[in-house]
Length: 328
Image (cartoon, rainbow, N blue to C red; front, side, top):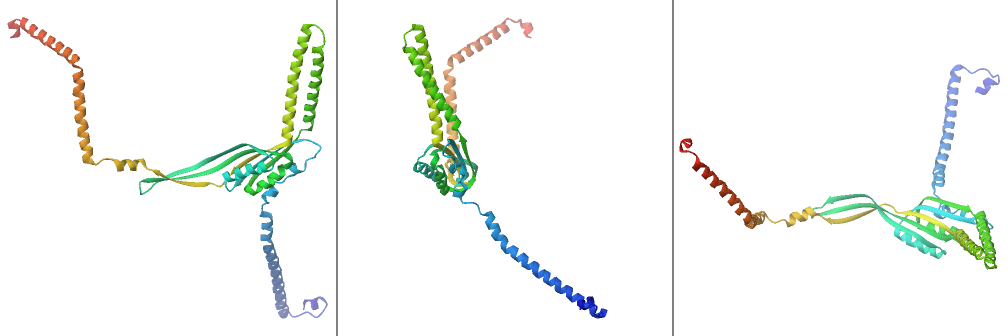
């Protein structure tokens, strides 16, 4: 009907045009709502799948994989270090399994510290005269391992089976190619200096000069040995990576039944009659001890009696010398 008006058809009466426009508006609104509902339903069905896809954590084996450990150039020397912080299901079992795992990959353990950290302790009195102790604690382990550098990646992937939740991991590869060359050149220089000093010390000459040459030769030998040891230490760091592990398990609860000292004391305390009898007996014994103690001090009492007698005698004598009228 609207098209007819636009195309030049005779105008529709107003009474018929208003209902038509109202019906057209309702139809367009209903179509828009159906399209919005369809889009909302599609988005709602896709949201859980997308959330599951983004919220799913990576597998421990994948989380412990890194090109720092597996993609290093073979023509250079690197000192590889790794650190892993994780929660395990059982700290003691995981520590033992990791020690076996390191040995299976050609490595060894240089440190294994395990301790239980108590976070809270509560005690409650029981009806049977005991006390129930509730202790919450966390068992933690600190391990340091040396693993062949070429097998470090495989070791960490196998380690993933012991991990319940990976908190953090960090890897490092220090390029020590130039340091290794420096150590080699230092060892070569000291070796050549030692040979030259050896020739000087063995050549004929003055004794003082030969002694100085021998002393310098000894110092050069010491420097050579230090250079050899430094190079050996660097080679060891390159050949074996150092892996530090910090492990813990979920908080545990320990229940212990303890003896209540106050309750035990009340149970073993004697009755009132027996306590009274015991007190009277102890009082009599105390009195006897006092008498015995006083008897031990008989020389003191003898001196006190002599002093008191002397004072009484002087008082009587003074009274006898006073005139009768003054006494009256």
